[in-house]
Image (cartoon, rainbow, N blue to C red; front, side):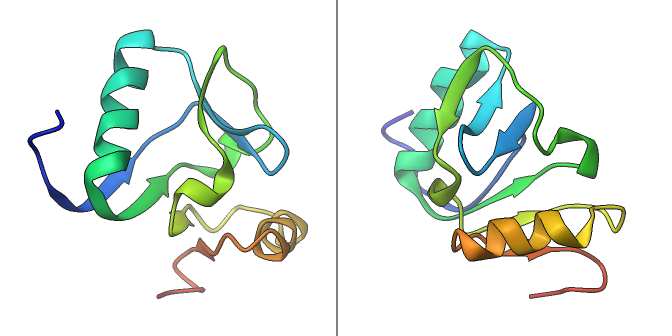
Length: 97
């Protein structure tokens, strides 16, 4: 994986919170994601609104490892505000790049 250069990495996660960061269940996926994160110029997490404040076994990294989170429009505004206060932009159909 160290030989790959990725311009933009779109990452999934099983859960995310400002306090715990990005979390996942798959150990094999964890190693791949962490390697791609090191070699990517830009990284976005793509997760639906149900993954916010969910937990999982393995920590991928802090919320600040991404350049933003792309999610659906059902995310509550208070969650958007909490993440943006932590310097993590949330992008939805209404709130685009």
